[in-house]
Image (tube, rainbow, N blue to C red; front, top):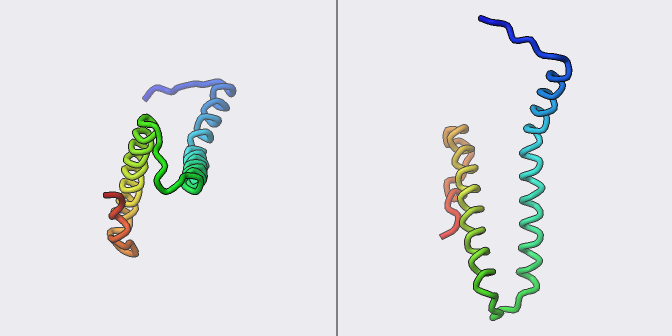
Length: 96
């Protein structure tokens, strides 16, 4: 096997990239908080029979599908890792 020689600067850059990748979950968590907070605020502000513009309704529908897909996958991965133990299968039914 050949040896790969890197400089200290390259090593520091690698460490930095690894640490930044570890922060991915932190960013996702922060983004989910923002989505949930502003969605709830809009829900509070909307009148019961208020009509939104077509493009707004389309974006909301797409976002619901996207978030639902992510949550189902996340929950299923958790289910597989735990081999079904301590997981309520009813929690996997999300959306329509």
